Amino acid sequence: MVMERLLVIGGTGLLGSKILEVAQGRFEVFGTYNLHASERKNMWKLDVCNRERVFELISRIMPDFVIDTHGLVNIDHCEKNPAEAWMVNVDGAKNVAEACKEASCKYMFMSTDNVFDGKKGEYTEEDEPHALNYYAKTKLIMEKVLSALDVDYVVARSSVMYGTGGSGKASFPAWLIEKLRGGEQVRIVTDQENNPTFTDNLAEFLLRLYERDERGVFHITGTDCISRYDFSVIIADVFGLEKELIVPVTSSELNQVGLRPGRVNMVNKKVENATGIRAFGIEEGLSIFKKQLIG
Image (tube, rainbow, N blue to C red; front, side, top):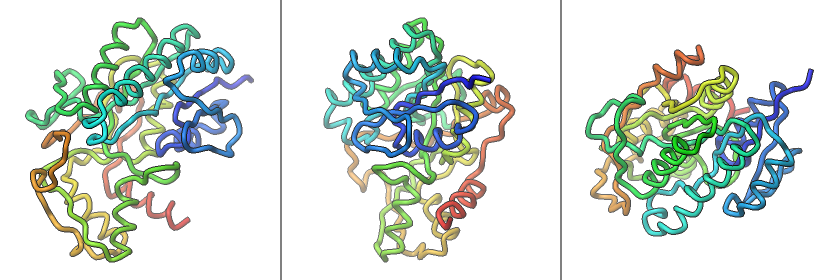
């Protein structure tokens, strides 16, 4: 039996590497990297801003579906460098989406909870987005591009991903654990609330959406909506670290360049019903995460 082919754009990142791991044995897997090379087989260097190269690679691999995890995600960097953010998050993603359309394969795009302004608190896929920062605006614009492109697509909005694997920037819990183990004091905001998402769980949702031939916009996050400060305290408890080193501050005290929404609790009912999978809560996700780190 010939396995279907999956191509992961950004296959050395936190989510991309996890998708490749979870998909192994279920699909014939391929991945791309840009800055962080990989020794995994079937990995290709790709700059998504090189349109000709994107089309060439997808036509060569001929995947059945593509999960696009690439992106410039640092909110303050995007705010200060809007042209770069647009080039990577909009133009680059559009290159991949249009190559998928030409190759007649499904395109899965990773978006963000930041497309909402936080004023409503709880959000379903039916709620109207209103992005406060430039990073989120690029993601929202790309969502609209997809709806107009007549491509078979899924938009997956997620939030505060954490898990093992990947090259480059560490996930928030990994960063926090390193700081606390080093005895460093950290300032964490109390007035930004969202749904931390375990990448193993997220990867399984994405693969199942493809297997069920779903299309459209889905919220895929953890079940618990919690402040970044409270999340940090739980992480410290789970890993037996000094939570007294975690200093509560407000967003205004951090002087962040890009505006962040206050509370965005994304509801998972649509994706759970579509896939038959249950979203993890924080304690379940952190428990598995801890076992994986210990090895």
